[in-house]
Image (cartoon, rainbow, N blue to C red; front, side):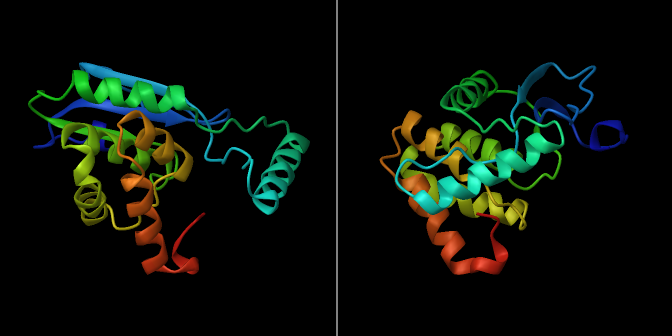
Length: 174
């Protein structure tokens, strides 16, 4: 809806993320667009058998209704980081969009912020994101891939875990 509203918002770039049965936001007239397709689901953990079983159960339930849930990958994080680098000098707003506007898009926005700042500013970038969108719960897998690709040495993952610990279990999705 933001793209269709007249006014002072000068959207010059869009990252739109959609799953199998979701649609990307229309981006006609926007000069810089990145469209990614993956679902708001986690990859199976190799070290946490309970989490892995939970993911397998969600995959089976989704398959019963014809869905094949695809988690984000390192390649998705790489594409977001490269896109952020190419638009770092635009005059205008970047819109990050997914169906709920909470997990995938906020992780994409966080990766952009850290790309534009520096890896040692991961905490500040996360705080800025939460000031902008208080309900943001960045997707942990996408954040972990970005942490590695941006050479954050675990700072971005740690900042996310610290925020989630402060929020408490009822405030987080993961």
